Length: 156
Image (cartoon, rainbow, N blue to C red; front, side, top):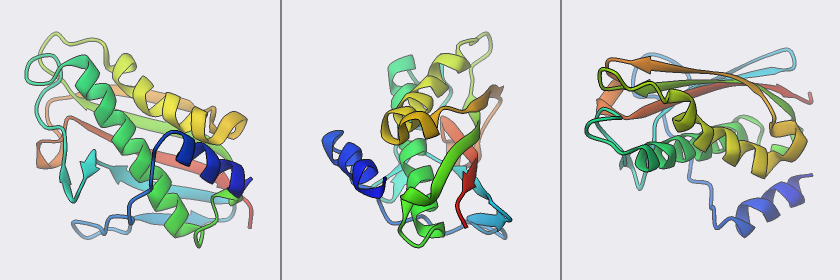
């Protein structure tokens, strides 16, 4: 499955970045039994937060969806690091929790997080179909427009 995952990433023009180091007193992931818990990932590209501000005022929906895609790419990068480079160990993405920095009155958080959900499902196939939450927030770290964390079932 790793070849097909790598093939899908390549076909989509995606090269996974190096997994980001934690920015505070936490770890980027925890493995407990057959579950991989990934800390929240920001829309980091080229070493900096690529999409900042409040969705619905500073950030357009399409840009916020791209931010969610970047978060998903960073989730996959963290998973690859946690799994010793072997994404084929992913059995299933259990849940994504999506947080959207939202302007007052913005109610399309679900459409924003679709950017991540679609990318994960396209890369991982059936194993990428997941439960999720899409929640509006007043602000996120580093003024990021989106943050997403994940829980994955993995092979030992």
